[in-house]
Image (cartoon, rainbow, N blue to C red; front, side, top):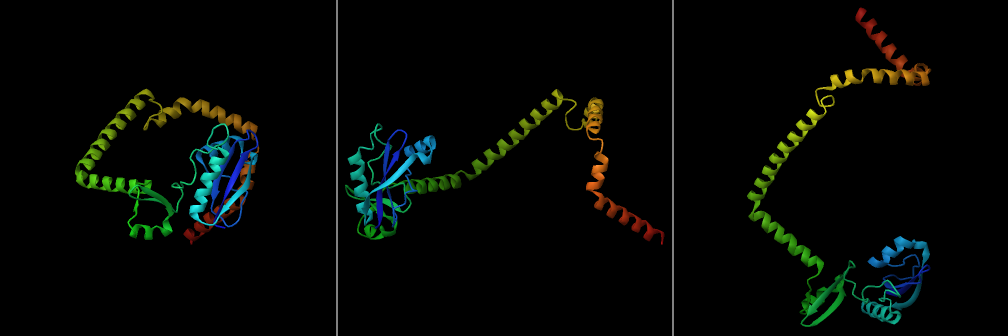
Length: 237
C-alpha cells in the first residue's frame, strides 16, 4: 500500500473531513491537516474526532485521484457537511510534490521522480519555491545596486534615533529628579525613613533571622574565619 484515504468525523457537529495520507498501514491517530480542519480541532479538541479508513492506493496518481473522488462523493467541501476547502488531489503544499506543465497540460508528481519529466519537455510551474527564489535574487540585486544608499540611510537613522533617545532620557530625568541616573543619593535620602521602618517591621516578624542565617552559612563562616586567622598568623611570622 502506497497510501490511503481517510474520513474524520467531528462527534460534536458531525462535520467530516476527507484526506489522504502516505503510509504503509492505517494510523487512526492521524486525523488530518487542513487549515480549516485544524481550527476545528483546536476549538473542539482532538478527542472529539474519530478517523476511519475508506480507501487505499498503490501509487501517487491513484491516491490523488481517489481523494478527489471521495471528496466529491461525500460533498465535504459543502460547509454544512465538511471541512474540506479544495477538491483534493492537489498536494502542492506537501513537501516532496510539485506541479509541472507542458503546453496546456499540467500534472502533479513527486520531486524524486520529476527529472525524467523535465528532460522530456515538461517545466515547473510558478510554484511558491520558484517565486521565493526569484524574490531572493531580486533582493540581492537591489542591495548590490543600492548598497551605499542603504548603508547611508541606516547610519542616518541610527544617528537620529540616538539623538531622539537622548532627548527622551533627558526629559524623563527632569520629570523624575529623584530617580534619574546620578541622583540615587537623593532618592535614598527621601526614602530612608520608609526603608528603615520596613526593615524594623521585617525583623519583628523574623526575630531569629540572624541565628537562622548563621546556621545556614555556618560552614562558610567558619572557613572564612579560619583563613583570616591563618593569614594573620603568617603575616606575624
